[in-house]
Image (cartoon, rainbow, N blue to C red; front, side, top):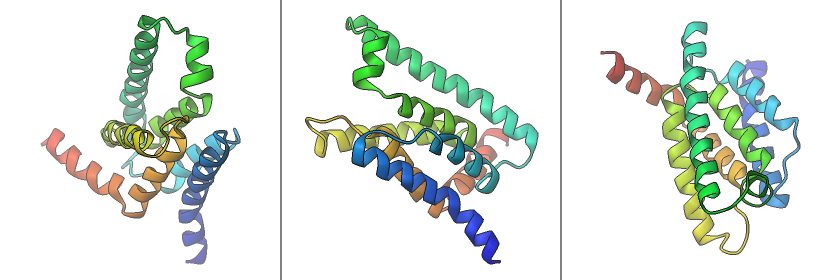
Length: 166
């Protein structure tokens, strides 16, 4: 019983470490991203079976690719290069965290989570980080911790899948 609780809380600790590091220094140790993906996939996995897991990754990765493409096109239209985009506006850690989320979260919860967490990040940026960069991975990891504590991915996904499939 103690082992089960220890294992189930480990992803939350890793997500809180990502949050802490991103808020503190706007940098996150690289190994926390694959560790978070592994722990989320193994312990907080709301997928009913492996087929659903695989079919969930495909739309999630396509959604992430679409988001990143729109972002790149938007900044290119403004005359900002891809290199400058990565250096000044969005960090590699943010993109790695998008990948962690796309692989770890079920479809369609991932899409809803991304929209809500990005809106909350923008709102936090307007209120708290006016002249600074926004700790996007940190804010998203904090939102995910709250979702996991309240078991939102499983309950929401079951409801959404019932709406889609029936």
